[in-house]
Length: 295
Image (cartoon, rainbow, N blue to C red; front, top):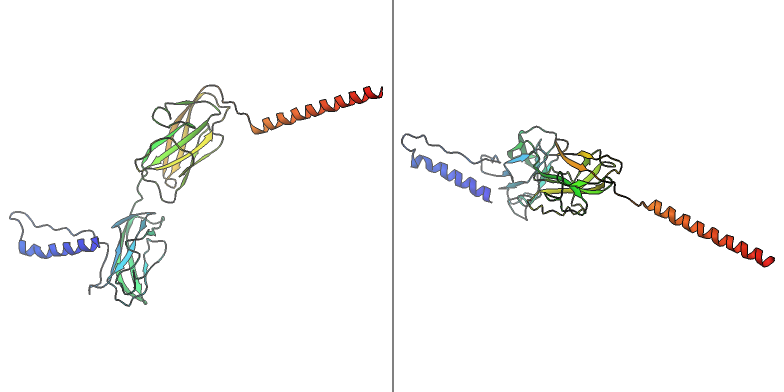
């Protein structure tokens, strides 16, 4: 509704220009607002988008207004969108569709070049409205933090890379905060020679990073165990995000004696050996008592 009101105000202002006249010595200038729809000459249906520009891999809401009371379905096609869009009346007899502006939007293709693409709305086999959808390059990443620190730490400036030193074999939490995360990228892979294997960090992770990340960034987190056979030194952490377009790195300082891990299989083996030894002792004692009784 706001967009339609803005267009009406713009048209009214244009109509008043001849009456007002130009300022002496200065050319009159009027700039039309960015248009997202190309209405029919008769002033009929208008095909609209919720944003004037949408990014590659982004989402855009699509709707139509000005339809006759008896319309039922409008199909919108555009080379920039992954699939055709089916619009229906907001309610019976309504002139506008239910999908705009209260929708989550439609997916923009990831394999197209930025540019302007035509969109066409058809109903009962005929074109009722057209529009132009402007697709812009995907916004770059905005990595505000990529840090690691001991599990259970705060991951603050004094308790995370590169200020903190961790021990070989220790457990650490890795955190990456992106102010402009890529769509449909809920997990990332962190690699380092200090790890026992690649680490997957995720959004909405159960690993509480213990930091106050309230700047609106999307937080990826996860934990891993460092190798216990690595020498002291500085090790790089690397993560690739934004579907391979952004590489971030951090430094992890490792020093000190390795952390001792009492593995479950070692404990279980010790228990089994102890039980076996106790059983042997009981059997030997029984044999001695039996021999003494026979004597």
